Length: 389
Ligand SMILES: *Cc1c(COP(=O)(O)O)cnc(C)c1O
View 1 (cartoon, rainbow, N blue to C red):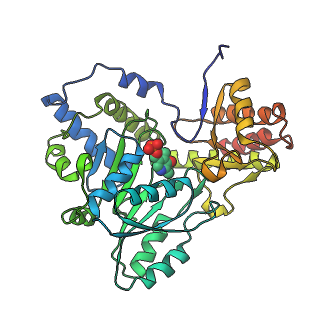
View 2 (view 1 turned 45 degrees about the horizontal axis):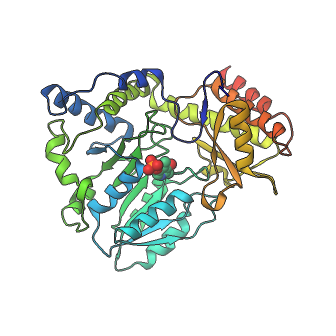
View 3 (view 1 turned 30 degrees about the horizontal axis):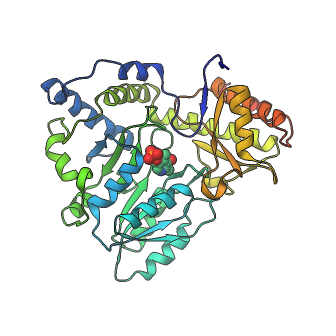
């Protein structure tokens, strides 16, 4: 049956694409070797640095975020290199699996999927690495599976405190453009992101922001770089070109998405995401449901993962919401499958859209027979009202 009105995409990526961005991608495509494209390419490659807050290069791939994970590793590491990772959830584990598959040796510190990176445990492990065998520390800034954030500046401090030379690699796929990220100030060596989350674009672009130290490491790294080679990008990017056909129309969209982030101001964008996250958590608590992230200081601004009451299926609940209210909620991933649902509040979202999304959750809980208390939407509205006063 036709579902009238706009579909609510309340998953933590892909997110709502603003109409202005969609229209930009619909422009006729362009000769990617033309002088006109070179000028456009140069502009885009400069502008993208403003969201990463970096002076060094950001390489743009026609790929999803997974590609940028691979790019980060193959450009800087050699076969057999040890890397230290922390299990925040499904995304840390997928990155670890990729590391295994390309010939580096990851060590994943076990976590319980309910917090960000435990810096103490990382410090203890790195302190034991007297010979500096660990070549990189890789962490997920915002774990999209659990709604837990990790402290990137905290991780930097641990490395500096120990004078450990490992590269710091950060997955900021679901953080960039929605949560504070400061590539240079935080001393990140490779920052990884993608287009379809806080950047408000369709899926299909990914990014690596690269420090001088990572560029230096790239000179001696021996993994096969293939498609992902920064060496191939550098000379062409200098002229605004790419070593292969770039995703021209997505780059048009990126230009407009950067206009929108500029017009709102990044600090306002981050504050809006924090406000929406807090409103969402107030709703969840009023429903009497449990938030997956169990440390307040680790709460994500872009996604809230909600635990289902014992004996109730998250997937069945999400089906009810999709069929009755034309809204997609995020599923539980891997060990959280069916045990949780995720509310994405990331990207191009305003208070009324969030209120609509939370209304859909509250009605879905009733229609789906999930035990809960009334009043979640009201709790969120009460908070948003005061915030706007
Ligand atoms: C979405 C996401 C990715 C990348 O996923 P793709 O589907 O390849 O774009 C990586 N890490 C995190 C934390 C994510 O949220």
